[in-house]
Amino acid sequence: MKALVLIWLTTLSVLPSFALELIDSLVVVDTIARDTIAWVQTVDEPRTLYDLPYSPSRRMESWGRLTQNTTVFALAGLATLYVLETLPEDATAWNKKELRHMGLFERWRYHAKQGPVWDKDNPIFNYILHPYGGAVYYMSARTCGFNVLGSLAYCTFVSSLLWEYGFETFNEVPSVQDLFITPLAGMVMGECFYRVKRVIVANDYHLFGSWFLGHLVAWLVDPLNELVSLFAGNPCKNRNVSMTPVTIPGSNPRIALNINLTF
Image (cartoon, rainbow, N blue to C red; front, side, top):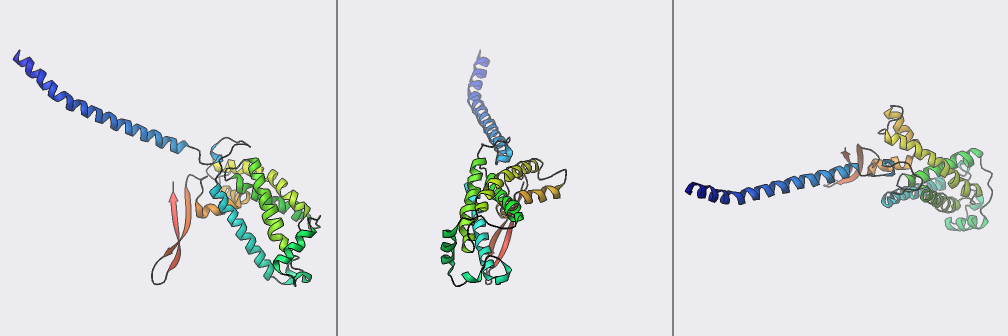
């Protein structure tokens, strides 16, 4: 009887500590399980439209990335305007001698009041290069997660307001063809480009088994996003290389590139 009492008392003294250890173990296991589930969900969570089945209406807008793209377009337009202003008179049809006496904004008002008109530009410009430019504008939004209508709206904004009635109007009358053909043909061509890039992204930027061909075609169908991705990272890639300008302090400060490689 005394032995049974001793066993009972020993059990009562050990049981609480054993129970606490068991509870702690369960908490650890539960924490690991939750972390594992969270990690799996993060890995499998779609980052862009390219991670989801094709849909013309689905949206995953990245307004921050689109803002970066628009900034690049605006800077490119300013640079183009500056270059054309400094070129000789016979180097471009934009700088006409009869307009040189006008101020820059006076020329914009003069051209805007006359347009739009049916231009007589080379058909290669109107029906090949301008649609391609529209497709580039379209892809700039499509790759940022906008659907077909949203990408068309952005393409129309860039081609018609930012460019046709923006930078280009400083030097020539707006064109009817450019106002309609660039965004509409750009949408059709751009959506074809989007389908092509989906194939490239799905194969880890390889096309027909070729890394070089995959990257080359990606740059042809979506040049602006590929350019911006060099500095801001490419969410469409599993392996990412980004280059960020940094300033090295010191007596003679220097600018360098901070290269980040992520997997």
